Amino acid sequence: MHMADALLSPSVGLTMSAVTAFTLAYAVKKTAADSTFNDKKIPMMGIMGAFIFAAQMVNFTIPGTGSSGHIGGGILLAAVLGPWPALLTITAVLAIQALFFADGGLLALGCNIFNMGVCACLLGYIGVFRTIASRGLSAKRITAASVIAAVIGLQAGAFAVVLETLASGVTALPFTAFLLMMQPIHLAIGLTEGLITAAVLCCIYNARPEIIESALGKNSLSGTVSLKGTLASLALLTAVTASLFSLFASASPDGLEWAIERTAGTSELIRQGGIYDTLSTFVDKTAFMPDYSFPVPGTTPFSSTSAAGLAGSLMTLAFAGGAAALIGLFKRKKSM
Image (cartoon, rainbow, N blue to C red):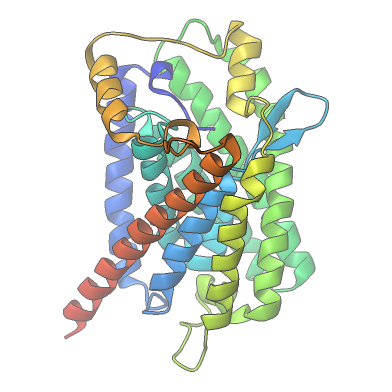
């Protein structure tokens, strides 16, 4: 559901960037003040960010539609890290995708963070997942919470996309027609994401229930809790997803592209001039792995995709983990 710059007017894009920047500043403040955020969460933020980057490369087919989807990852991140660290982590994923892989525009970055991050981490997790899971954790309750939260979060994000294009005056995407394409396809994607999220969370819960309890605010992952095995397992899963599972991603258009094509008759809407050309030129210089292809002479399409997946995962690990480390350092200095 990565929006391109052409779907937005400059005023809407810049307004949403400002709204998102304010929300992220607040997320940093909330994370630093969170009593459950400690040194054990720092590597977890990096590893989980890397995993979500890799997982978003794996588009799954939506049967009978000609469309595909991938997980957004907001609910999974929030259930492991807590909602505010999760929002910062998904921001790292989306920023790296936009800058280095030309996936989602820079003008649209604020919208993408809002649609896939705020809607999932705050509305989906706090409003739905936490409400259900706080009544008592079990595999059944985690599954129900994951599916319902993923569906509601993605439906809210899809609706936000429709509103953002409406406010931008994209006449090729009339409100009602676009809405009727966006919501049903993202319902199917949300159900699938919910089941994937539930599977991963149930594995984590069986291995280390303290992780999910910490995100719910029930404990702070004390020094007696070792996460080495969990972190190693997540790192291995990330490497396999980025290098192997990504090779089997569906080539069908994702839910947003599919909805645009069904509504406008084309999946490529173009705007030129001014800020669009400026940002496009900038991304042409920064995106050294466009379309998740590693530009090394002699590589096959398969090895190129695997290399791009691993490189992007490592970059996200460094970015999200580095941000977590800085917040942790600030928190320690403030407590002295």
